[in-house]
Image (cartoon, rainbow, N blue to C red; front, side, top):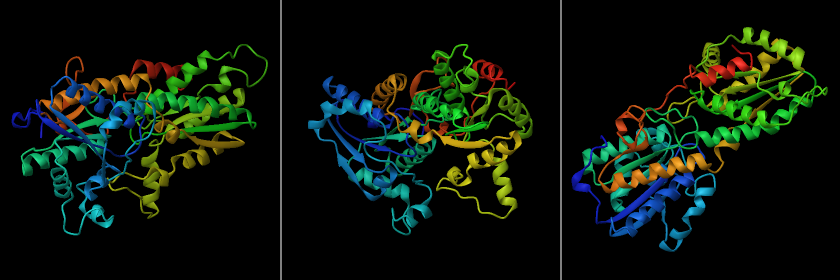
Length: 420
């Protein structure tokens, strides 16, 4: 269903029952998104755009919706909702559930055998008399929201309006210019590595592999590298005769993202020279880098590739970090290798100023869209001139947007570290 107005469901001057769910992996925006949506709904009530208001929270994402587990947000707590702007995680819990994967929902006990999860979810929303459902999540969450919105429209006359909020630290959702939490995660990943990099002094010929989240997109790896090098430039690491008290030892020596083709042996030859002259090697790589080669090796050996309910490869089971540490360490002659993952540290942070501002702009427009009777996923529509924030048609929302490695800032960074 598109984001066109359903005039018969215009909520202006009506009592509105609003519901929330957060789903998928964590990102530094879940709590802030809920806070700002609540705040703008309260403003709508105060401005007499609507006559009444209630908030319901489904617990554990789509799981809570399917099993009917929810809590109401008491009016006595509305005034303190701003506190959520400054904490990480989700105040109502997440899960990874695919509404169109009936077999998985049945096996996990969320719906009865023979049931249709989309119908179960719809009936629960109707039973709870929900007028607007805010789904806060990434591409999987919002593609599921699209399915639910379309199902509600076709089977139940669009009685529940669905407004998505796009969170993902991968920043890989079409056609959204910037997803919530991605910039915060990059900033936090840089802070993480600012400490980890000191391990370069722990052993001669040290190899540090910094694994950054990002299944198919190199955005977070690249942006984290950029943020870290900004921090590094501010440090007082002058012309010291001390071997590790300099920017060369603390800098990044390689940045590998899924979109960038490279030969490991060629990179190893270059990095061997770095190791010989600097004494250490620091590599940033996205968790999806090299996965195709690893999967090909596994399948050739007859091994089963582990996947989740959405069909995504379980990267924690594939372990690209182990693959690179074993192969690169041998090729460059590293004496000690460590793999450090910043993902959980970065994604669990509270939203920074940049993301809170973006969330606020989208929340404001999202509430206005719902009152007008619209459905869609909020965001900066990069297919429209000026990238306006609007309720983007759900059928246009999809994941897998690659990071644009041709961007001048990224190419300049690669040149500065000697990678191209």
